Image 1 (tube, protein in one colour):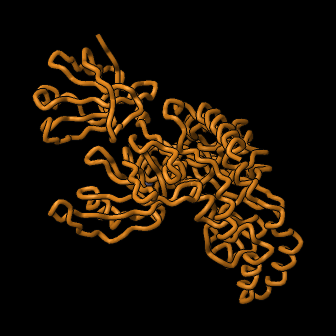
Image 2: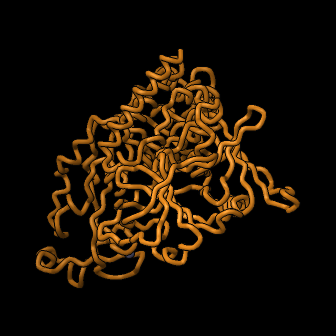
Image 3: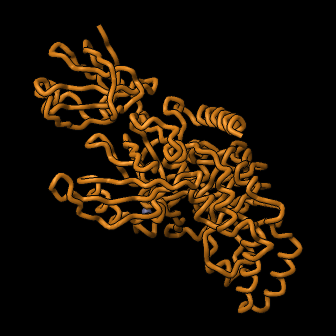
Length: 496
Ligand SMILES: [Zn+2]
């Protein structure tokens, strides 16, 4: 008698003339193996309410039959069939949320026919084009149709044709999507072959098509697009001389932490704003204040003595081969690079004697590390020569950083002397500043021109294909990625 613990990752109704309406599910076990399960028409009433998408269940006593046909949802050789005596039990410990079974394939493997079109596939790509919603007559009935063009990390394009409710759903959601980068995930898509051209389509109701989904690998895909494609890359020298309000990516090494500004501050727990210290009545007498309790105010919430929460605010001194500057990190990004929260490191409560100069070792450990920083060049930097830049995002993943540094071709980088010399001549003449930028984007700065970025993107490695069962920790994930990298390189060698 079979007994398995599984999570339901997809559930849909299917109607066929032979079998009537059945409930179909894709379930996944703790090791990431997927299998399809079918509840036949006569049993749907018995099980319908016990099995929702996302639920973890123990299934006991069921039948198995061979998986076959042109719409195979998993590569499992069998499918599960519920029987009247099948038992469904709830679980105390559900399978992890991250276990979504999403394993996107390379577009190239669809397009060149490597993948067997009898098996449904997952894909993930950036949405680069969408057609108008059309009405197409199918079996004498008008059916909605929309075609999406997706681009993957290897810069290959795939057409995804969606029909019926899928077409309408995506059409409505595209109108509503506020983000500049729209990532589209298709789960259980059907590879269609037409005159040797391959595209993807929804497989009846089984497929799922989601924009900007919370699925394995999506965040990484979006970061990659943001850091490698959409945001221009700048050296520190270029950042300092920029006359343009812009966001850019800088690869820099932290060489010290500026402790003058402290490394954390006390904030209002409600709005996160820094609290201000206010003097009590008679507080101008130094001796008196020593014995008075400190009073704080949140000027945003307009309340006295709000609940205080420490938050990081770190000023990193950073350098690359062209110069140095200061990057300022707020709480969440500091947490990302040091791996601890401000509450863990700051003193338990506020007291007047703050030894803010003593930066904890776990914080100073970041000195010497190289990261990719997405920063913002603002008006204050251009007009007032402000020299601290706020960091918006950081990439700490070693593989992505090394990939980024490989892209930094020696011919593409601007030589320091040229940059400083050119910039210097524009200090007194802001109107000429645009010329400097033109120069930066010109021949000497070819590493940041869109064309070369495109070309270089082709060396990137598809990391969205990380198996979900290895996703339990960051360290594991990195290991796994490295393994994949080697595999891919080997495959390439064989092909060549
Ligand atoms: Zn507040």
